Length: 250
Image (tube, rainbow, N blue to C red; front, side, top):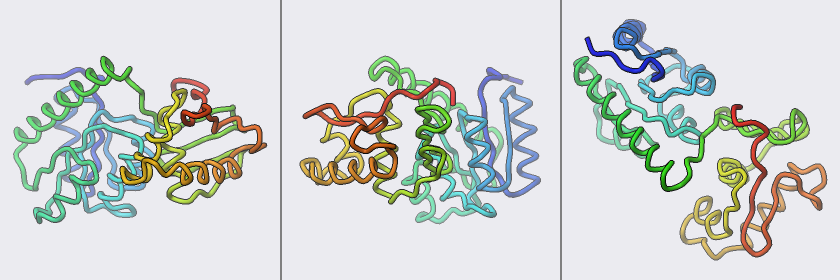
C-alpha cells in the first residue's frame, strides 16, 4: 500500500457518519494526517486551527451548508477542495466550482478514483505554490491578521470578525473586503488601481474617490486617532498598506 508524507493534512467535512469513518480510515491508512467533522460551522473553526492542505467537502451539512463553508474558506485559504456530494445536478456543480471548489465527485464513487483526484489536487497545489514562491515571493495565507498586540487590530478571516482596541468592529461588506485585501498583503503597498479592481471590479479602476471614501470610513472605525493612522497607512500618490503582522504564526 503506497503511503505519503504524513505532514499532508486533509480535513473531511462530512455529515454521514459511515462515510466519515470510511474516509478517516482510508486516508490515515495511506499516511495522511486527517481530521473530520460533520458540522459546517465547526469545520470553519477546525480549518483555522488545523490549516488543511486539502479539504473533502460534503454539501449537505447541518448548521452551515457546504457552499457557505466553501465561500467563507475561500476568503482566507487556497487549499484545494474536492466536493463529495450526492447532488449531481449541473447548477449545483457550477455553483460549487464558481465558489472555489477544485473538483467535484458525485456519490457513490470508488476509493481509487477519490485517491487519484486527491493526488492530482495536491500535485497541482504544490506546483502552484512553487510558481508563486518563484514569481511572486510566496505570500503566506493565514487564518487571521494581528497588528499592535492584544489591543491592536485583529482580522479573523475564518470567522469574519474584526476587532480594534479590544472591541468588535462592525464593517459593511465593502469595508470588510477592502480591509481583507490590505491585510492579506500586509507590509506591501497596493496601488489605488489594484485595490479598486480587486474590491470593486475592473470597471472602477479610475474611481479613486470610492477608495478615499472607504479608507476614511475604515480609519474612523479602526484607528485610535484617524488623523494619525497606525494601521491603514498611505504611500502618497501610490496606494495604501497595513504593517506586517506581529508574528508569522497567528
